[in-house]
Length: 83
Image (cartoon, rainbow, N blue to C red; front, top):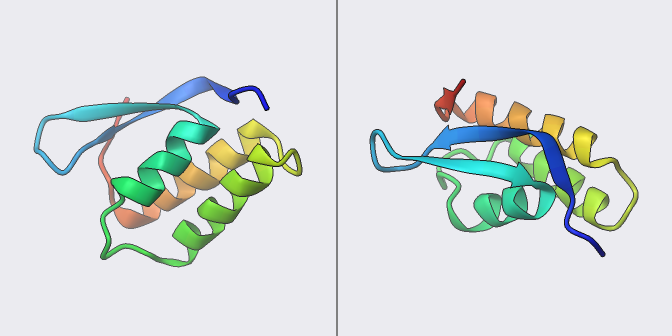
């Protein structure tokens, strides 16, 4: 399956103050959730985002919908977003 790039990337702050990472695809978002997500924030939206990213990767959901779900999890966790 081709990589699912997003029309509008999401830039989030890392665990190091002032450093950011750009999330621009469904696959990169999944990697971020699995490897870089703040472990204390595994709220309902986090679980929903993981499922949405998997669904998008398997063709059951659009990349845009997966992005929206990922963004909701980021906001709920209080991860700083750079605009």
